[in-house]
Image 1 (cartoon, rainbow, N blue to C red):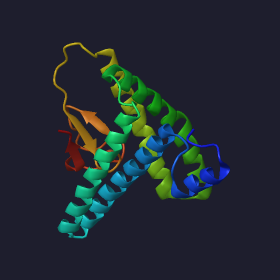
Image 2: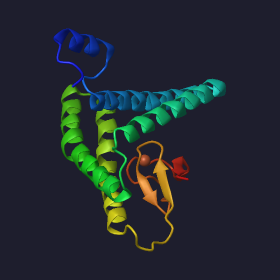
Image 3: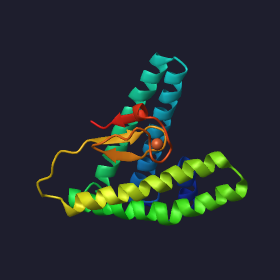
Image 4: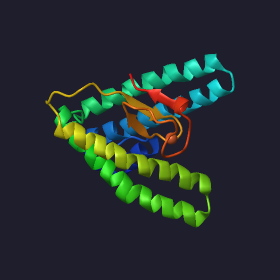
Length: 182
Ligand SMILES: [Fe+2]
C-alpha cells in the first residue's frame, strides 16, 4: 500500500487512483479497456449514420486505448504463457456464464426489460461455446492441427469454425452478417 493515511486514501479514491501499484494497474487497465470498447461502439454508430470520418477517429483512439490497456496488463504481469492464458480464459468464461449472466438474466426478466434479457442471453449462450473452444485449444496445444477459420456473428457474438451456416443458429441472422477473423 502506498500510504495508510486516510486523507490520502480519500483523495486517491476521488481521483480514481488505487492504493498500491497493483491497484493502479488494475484500475488503469479496466478504464482503458472500457473506453476502447465504448469508442468502437461509437465508431459503429457513426458508420451507420454515414459519418465515416468520425468513425475513423473513434477507431483510431480506440486502438490507442487498446494499446494502453495491453501495456498495463503486461506491466501487471497478467500476460503469461499461452497455456496459462488459456487456463485463465477458461476460468473467466466459466465464471461469466455460470454466475454472472445467470443472475443478470433473472434481474432483467424481473425488470421486464426484453432488450437486456436478449443482450445477457446472447452473452451467456456464446460463452458456453467459447469455453469449449478454449478447452479444445488447451487440449491440443503443441499438437499439429489443421488450419481453422473463425467467423463471428456481428449481432450475437456466436463463433462458428470453418463452415458458415445459412443462418446464425443463435440469433437467426443471415450468413452475410458473420465476420471472418483474420
Ligand atoms: Fe448471431
